[in-house]
Length: 591
Image (cartoon, rainbow, N blue to C red; front, side, top):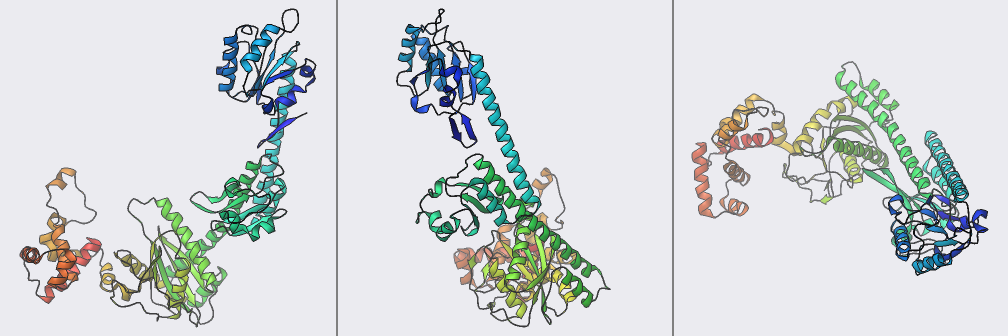
């Protein structure tokens, strides 16, 4: 018996139903919609009125004797119109009078109403038992649904088993190709083939880039826009897609198969990363133990680290490094956590690629540190121009030090530069702080605190022109960061800048007030603070200040006079300028 084929498998069609004995012996006459007799039937419905639309959802075959409206042309037309609007599969109309003879008049009305319609309309000139038709059709449809459920269960069990047994990507792709009977390709986001299977898949991989872009063709391969595919990876970070570039031999549950395959590939990658997460947690615990313990010597610490995959070369130099992700106050904490996790894994992978080892720890949300081990030979990457994460190439001059970033430095720093080059395309921005290198693992772990302070200070820079910062790069800002919560430093800054701070002076950052109290306060004079910063940045050079501040000389002198009067000091005095500069830097960082 004929069936229609769709993405869900073989379905009962109108043409197939007409072969059923109960209908075929009645001499069915197709008077409209011959070309659509292969339409799949979703269900069978019996109607006795022309107003049938509200009972249909689409895909139904409607059986009727049309007794109530067969002799009214307008009613017959309305009946067929409603079937078309409801997207019914078609209709079978029994036109038999009380004497069991064919109703010629009604037959003419049906033919006229069906003229030029695409809706399949079948007339039965002999009496049939609708109950037998519906029983047969529903039995077939229910059997089809049960078969689909069974097939879905088999697919589910197949991919569940692959996931539980930690099957590799190649194994999953091979099983998918077997189920579909067609080549299957797994590619990454750059359209590089990661795995392939199925007859002819090797040929496709040889010209895959051209097939993706449309510059190459292959017999039997559809246009890239028509490929069946599913993304692979978590929604926040897709890492590839599974593609079926040719029509599948088995279209039954095709979408379900490739979706389950995509999920299995995602779970496999996640399981691999979970193992790595456990290892990183263990490394983080070791670093905390080294930091908190006075009795753990360097030899014991190295032995523990080796058991966790940290295997430095003999005589290696250890460099403490802290990475601080950029974040706004309203950044979603979950997003920061995912970015930190992803970047940590990228750094570990990059360390392996450059031939080094690193011991990693999470310090706080959005901040992680690692100890990088460098052998006694240089990594040879110091001649590269530095990049700020995010891809901006710079000339290598530090905003804070005012000195060019040379290609010199320790072997470990050279290696770090190469490692950061490896991860510079990661979709986030960050700043890196570096502590003093050490021949001792315990000494390097102790240096993570210093590296963290450097990274925190460097994160406040408006312009970053180094791939990483040492304490010598952040200079005065680095020193002032050590006095972030020092009440004496706050008193000094407020004493120097007090006349410009208004009621902001004398309040700690945690202080709060009601809206009415805040409105009564005198705000800080930001314009004069900015002008003081301009003056100090240019050493009081009038021409440079005028250019940078877009001010005329008369306006500049007026503001200088106002600023000196408010502060009560002369800006020509070197000690006053130094004190004001230190106070303003601290206030901008911690006030």
